[in-house]
Each structure stands twice: as structure tokens, then as C-alpha cells.
Image (cartoon, rainbow, N blue to C red; front, side, top):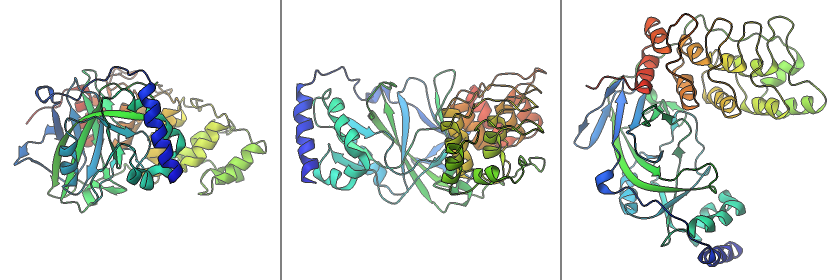
Amino acid sequence: MRGMRAIVASLRLFGALLVAFVWTPPVAAADKPVIEILQAGRIVPVVDGVHELQRAPFVVLVAAGAGAMSVFTSTATGAAIVSGDLRGRHVLAPVGTGMAVLPLSLHPHDQPIERYDGLSPAMLDRWGVVLGPDLVGAYGAERAGLDGEPAVVLSGRQYSTVIRRADDAQLLPVYSLGETPVGKADVPGLSLAVFFDPVPSPGRVPWTRLSGPEVVVVRFVGPAAPRRMPAEVKPLDCGTSGVVRALHDPHWQRLERLLRDGVDPNLKSAKGGSTLLMCAVGGVTVQPGAVGALLDAGAVIDTRAAGGETALHWAVRGAGQRDAARLIGIELLLRRGAGPNVADAAGDTPLVTAIEADYPEAVALLLAQGADPALPDARGETPLARAVRLARTEVAWMLEVALGIASPP
């Protein structure tokens, strides 16, 4: 750890020698972003500083004009306490660290947001190994543009499924707390500390500059809405060959060995034209490691089966187990370039396929990665019209919010 402290001292000296760049100041009190909680298409009013929710999915909505949103969560009041201490300060957060983030899941825990004055010895004792030398080294580049030692915050952080609407409003659908559906979670209160990155850029070093925060407190009351899966949603049957079994083996390194030994990652079945990638994401279970192994080996992500469907169509059907692993597999496809607006032979996009399957988590992921909520099918029917016709209530209100037509109370 002595060596790590020496790195910190060197970084501070190095930062002083760098040319400072322009920094966008924290959001002024008069320009505070408007944060609302929506449920079932309605804005949930604040009563004594608290939003009371049914134990069912909800959406965090931030009006246009704010920087890129991140949400830190805690089941304790510590989130509000620590957040108040950060008001008006420069704040940095390392990208990609902290508790593992699952799509559409907030990760509340009893510990408040961890806050440190820069890369302090205490912070490095706890997080130095997690951050690694590259991220620690990159700290100096961000530190150089600030006029004082920034606070560093670490905690479970949700940002992967923030949906940007056409009017630049941001939506964060929440379906579970950790790996527990909201309807089953015994969480009497939840503190959401909402931060904003005022200057997001793909070329930035892996530290995020945050402004804010604003604290939103929610309390769950009432029964959970029942969840169901349409009986017609069936998994893709790819047979029982050795390579197909390897796709669903928790030890997906076996699949990697087969691919290294010459198995073609773009194999297609003679009947139906389904690919290994479709089999990996369309079965009863999904192993994200297997999906990544196929893509790394050169699997063509938008290959079409006989019916024109892609692997993404099969993934968002949600046949079999609708668990975190399946959502991670869907997100992996999207982040590796799967087309969210590619239509199959019937004219259905993956978004429409997810609506048909009544799979709101998949709908949220698709919307967050560029699926067009207004794109009509070959018959001229829009995704929202399809959701209403099929009585997909949760999906319908999410589409209404994404389109900006959800009704206020």
C-alpha cells in the first residue's frame, strides 16, 4: 500500500503540471433538474418528501436539460446525508466499479454511498485493488482540471438502461432491487441519489464528473402487480448435440475450447436456419459467457433464420427463465451491435417481439439501445397500438412514457 500512496503523490504532482481544461460547474440551485417518479403511466405525487409506490415496476424520469443521469441507491438515510455533504463540491466517480450492475436493477444496501476526499489512503486500502493501476493512473487527468481536491464516491450505480426520449428527457425503468423483483422485496424505503455528468463524452478517461446530487425517497406500499408469461412463448429447440449442450453449460469455457478446436461459430441448422447464437439466447436458460464467446469467435450478430428473425428476436422472446442472465445476454447483443430495429419476415422488430411476449424488461433494454418506439410494422401498427391491443399493460405505459404521452394524474 506504500507503493499505492506513492502513486497518489505522483499523480497529484503530475496533475499540477497538466493544462487544466474547462469544467462545467455543478447545476445551480435555480437550474435543478426536475426528477419525477412514474408508475402505471402516472406521476407519483410527493407526500412529506416521499413518493409512495405500489410494489411494482416504476420509472425515474428526469426532465430535459440535465447531464447524463446516474443513480446511486441505499436503503438507509445515509444516501441523503452523504449527498447533502457533496452539494456544491466537485465529485468524481470511477466508471465500471462498485457493486455489479444488472440491467433494470437498482442495488440498495444498508451502507450509504462511500465518499472519500480524493484517492485517500483509506480509499486505496479499500478500493485500490478493485480500481487497478490504470484507473488510478487516469485519476490525475481528471483531477488536473479541478480547482480543488474532488470527492470520490463509490457504490452500486445504475446507468446502463437509461432511455433518452426524443425531447431529451431521461427515463430509468426499475424492475428489481438486486436480484429480487420489486414486488417481493421487503424494502420499506429507498433513497435514490441522482447525479448528473454535465460533460459526458465517449473519449473521456474512465472517471465521471458528477454534479448534484438530488435525493429522491420512495416507500413501497400495497401488493405487487401479478406477472405472467404468455403460454405461446416457447424456447427455441436446437437439439442435444455436444455444441448445443455446451451453449447452456455454466462452465462455458467448454464452448470456448470447442470454438478454438474449429467449431464454426456461424453454424446454422438445416431446419429453420437457426444459428448457434440464436440457440444460446433463445433456449430455456442463457449463459452470458457463452454469448460473449460466440461473438468473440466471430459469430455474425444479425444473421437471419428462415423466418427473418435474428438472435435478438429470439433473446427478447423471454422463453424459459426470465432472469438476470437472460437480460445480460440481451444487453450484450445490443452493445455488440445487434440491430434493435431490424424486422423479421412478418415485419416485426425485436421491440414488437418483446411486446408480444409481454417482456417489459426486454422492452426497456431495447428502448435504451435505440429501438424506435414509433416505428410501425408492415401493417402500419405502431408498437404502442400492439401493446394496447394485446393488453400488455406494463409495456404500454413504458412506451407511453418513452413517447412522451403518459397522462399526468
